[in-house]
Length: 401
Image (tube, rainbow, N blue to C red):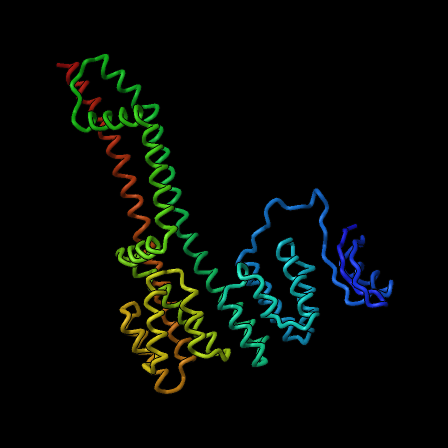
């Protein structure tokens, strides 16, 4: 049986606290209700062996699933409190289960769902909560929850495709690195002793290879210390606002990679802005939230100027085009939306267009990345092989001579 902590009100109006044991949360609430306690709040109290040293993280996949299920329950006519309770009871993630029970308690106290989610910003991002708040005001909660679930699913699918595409190049890189380490650490020292015993004149590639091996063997500790210091300095610099801004600008300037990142940010911005405007959020607030959802500091800095220009009456499309970060096609599509009064639809169309463009650029990037990794590792391994073979051939000729 599980132990539960509870807070309730006695018949005389006095608040009482305590613990009870029951098979489930519902059984605990029923037992307390039979004791004539009211306004009951029950919270699971794990035993010593059940206490988690670190709270388990709630994955984006879990947020997507509970969003979809919650939308389905609401659409089916199930009360919101019962829907949240059912999701919390069925969750295998202890952190998510506790969070949903806290949301249930808040709903029972008359709070809105978005207000309850506001207490968990690490699980539900700002744009999610903003869209949800507007949906509650407009009475479109089930529809908007389904839209949020679809957006989260698309975002997860894009990340999944990138990870799957990087598996093969990563395996090739790791295997090549292991091969080089084995050659430098075990094979080359044996050949060095063999060449020294013959007193042979070694070709230039072999001398370079042995020199690099000797340097690494003698100064491996200095290399490790230097690498560690470099990583610490890099982490410190990237921890500053200026460092993150320079990093994001550098990423946007990298050929092929920069264009792909740029399209991904444009697609995310248009998708979130479209969802918020469709849910009834005022455009200035929607623009602020959509801007804050972007991880790139360069985009966020430039888009803050767009918000100021829009508040001064310049519209949205013109300031976006002035940033130089949005492709002309995107700015033109949004301009048409502003002129025809269909900005939310045009934002959705723009997001869908750049979603397709992003897929194409990802395939192109991955198609370039795989051969580059193979060529680089092939050159390194090939250089090692040529250095050894040329040395062996040279020694053989000198012995024959």
